[in-house]
Structure formats: C-alpha cells, structure tokens
Image (cartoon, rainbow over all chains, first blue to last red; front, top):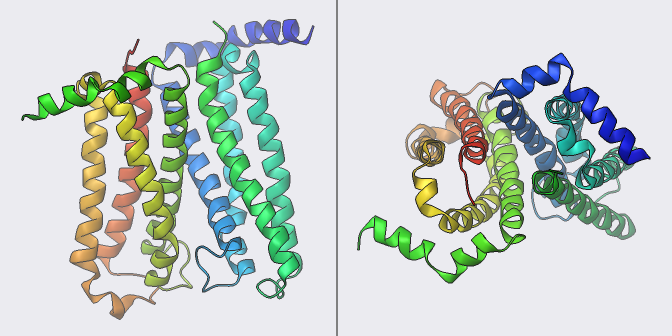
Length: 168
Length: 166
C-alpha cells in the first residue's frame, strides 16, 4: 500500500511544473548534484577531522573541544543546503529516489549520523577540560568516532548506489 | 611504446575486464572515489579558507597545514587509485570525453597552484605565518584552489552524464 502511494506521489510530483522544468533543462541535475557533493564534502570532512582528532591521529596540538568547536558547527547550515539540493533532485526525478529502498537506507543512516554528531557535539562541549586524560571518556569517544566515520561513509556509498538501484 | 599502446594494454588487462563486467565492482570503486574526493575537497577547503583569512585565523598557517594536509594527501592517494581503476576499465572512452580531459587539466592546475605557492610564494612564510591577513600571493593561491577544486568536482559529475558505457 505504501509502495503504491509513493508511486502515485512520484507520478504527481513528476507532473508538477518545477519537476518539468528540471527534467527539460539538461544542466540543472548535474549542477545541483555538484553542489550536493560539495556540501557532502564539507559535512563529511568536518566530521572526519573531529573523529581523527578523537583518535589522536591529527591535530594533537589542540584540545578536542577546540577542534570540535572549529569544525562541527559548520555541519548544520550545510545540512540545510543538502536538504534543499536533495529535494530538488527528488523533484526532478521522483521515482529515482522515492521508489528506491537505497534512498530510504541513506535517509536512515543520515538520521543516525545527525543524532550521533549532535550528541558528540554536546558531549564534548559539556566537559571541555577533561578530555585527553580520562581513559573511559577516550574509549567512548573512539567508539563514537569510529561509528561516525562508518555511518558517513555509508551515506556516501548509499548516495552513489541510488543511481544503480533505481526502478526502471 | 606510445601512450595509445599503454592505454590499450591497461584496458585489455584482466583487471579492467573485471571492473567492466562485474556489476558490483564499478559502483563500489565509484563510491570509494566519491568518498575520498569529498575528503580531499573538504579538507583542502580548510587550508584555502585560512589562506584567504576567512577561517582558522587564530592559528598559524603552518599549524593549519600540518594538521589538515595528512588527511588531504591520504584521501588524494585513494582518489587517484580508485579513479585510475575506473579509468582503465574504459580508458579509450574516457580519453575521448572532453569533461574527463578537462578534469585532468584542472587537477594539474590545482597541483601547479600548490607547487608554485610552496616553492615561491611561501618562501618567506615565517614572516607572515601568524598573520590573519596574508600577502596577496597567498590569498590568490587559496582562492584559486577553491575554484579549481569546485571545477574538478563539477567536471567529474559531468563525466558521469556524458559517458555512455555498456
């Protein structure tokens, strides 16, 4: 039933003037995809730089809260750009995503990444002074950092895979 | 041996054949390529914004580069390896694609921009390492780098839309 409803909705969306404009103007989709990927680059790199600092692989010369303050806030406004460009891509080719389980996997991973990143940001800023000494905190941090890298990679992989699993 | 022979030799290899024929291998390599390019572009942006005086200005330029560039270079190595594997799977078609060739030249330009910056403009780096507003050559290098990498990503995306494989 949900499948039928999504299929119906996709059909309706594809018939809207905005969708029609995107479909018939060849450069829009690649341009929006380029902006989408550049935004993913900012979000993924910001998270990765903090995660690598948690693992003490990069930027050991600065305390973790400082690194987190430097990189994590950028993620939130750029996520808004991702939401807008992602929506345009869906409007332009509704069936490509809305009738595609890979797209929902990506959204589930994204929801998890958002919760994880927000949690990490709050957790790090809540006790700025006791990061590099406390072993238990370090272990928890490393588990969260590893999870974060895996989930962001999963999002990128799922994003690419949408192109290969779309219904005909 | 000419370039053409070299390209055909790679394209005819068993490895290239596997990438072409296996339904999973190409998307997998492509995903690795996208993920690594994201890290290259996102991390180099941190350095470029520092050169432009728009971010990380409370840290010296050398501290920013030493903290960020190891990630940039590692990701770049993965991007070149994964890109190379996709290339050999259809080398002749890629070389005939204008966006692919443009992407290579833009990469070359980004590399030259970096080499020129390090070799010439940054020779007196200790003098302005801590400054927030850097000499014009440094700001120019940062701005150029951002534009070049955006163009690299755009060309990469356009290759996907203009290559008809299969």
